[in-house]
Image (cartoon, rainbow, N blue to C red; front, top):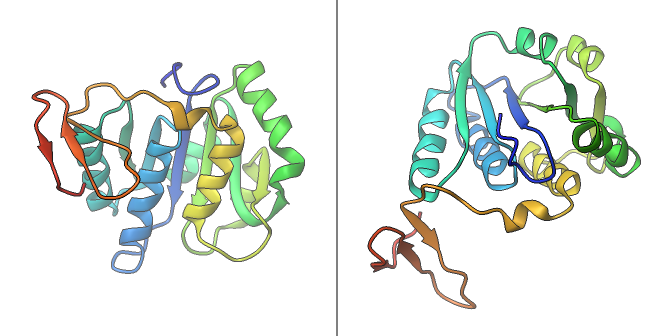
Length: 193
């Protein structure tokens, strides 16, 4: 795990479940959101290889450190996690009520976090094995949105200032237009990622 992640030890994301054809884009966006907003690793189900390839490609082009992996045993990953497990679910405790305790366990106690993000109906054992079941609004919405809000609250905005290593290109912030610069040659391109 990357101990240089914003505010402490590693944060990993586990995408629990993947329905090929239905979840392809959403699963990929879970990985991209995890990378962009401060996590240092994502695990995808073993049938989500295309999502892993896309996240690896983005990491290669726009920098890291970040690792995407496949797992054929997500439930054993949860059971054997050496740290705290946070299950993001609309049925959990309100994020604003538990974020301080989670942040303290992560940052102050040095506990790595595993954030579990479901796809289809999550089995009850995940609720039981999690140290926290956390809801962002307790309303139906996108798991990508829930992950983004949770990571931002966990890191208190520090993830937005993250520096990226080994990038081939970088996006230049602009009021209008799109600009991507090559890091190695300083050539400008108007290409989208």
